[in-house]
Image 1: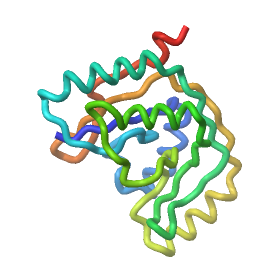
Image 2 (image 1 turned 180 degrees about the horizontal axis):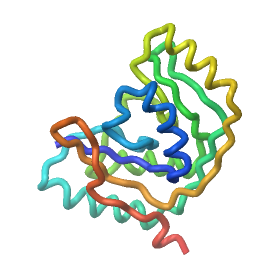
Image 3 (image 1 turned 90 degrees about the vertical axis):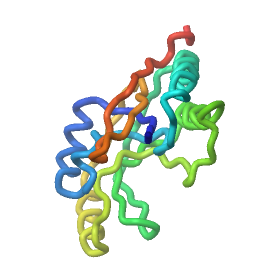
Length: 172
């Protein structure tokens, strides 16, 4: 089964992102707005007990994170994905790295670029038009995120939460 690890932003930010995603993101109905910490990986039911144990330990030792968004950006010309750029922080980078160790050890396919997708699978012209108009918007948002989620993929391609991990239990 496929699993992934993500942060979900506040409802306020999810509502804003969804106002664009429903028009520009082909995966709109499959997963809520999120910041991917670990892309899809395979795991068996037998592996899951060890994985969740390690995720609890990582969460306990990781403080809540502040995410800050200041602009809209794109992965073009590599692909036509438009996203809210989450300012990279040391804490976010460390959490990402921890989620690629132990029983989750893997080499990420791409460099970690914290972001929340707004649109994807757009034609070149549509990408250019949408990116141009969204870049004119003033994007300033900051919030504290105090949990991450282990997700699993259903047969229809949608993702749902398997378990939620609160950050910072052992940080005080």
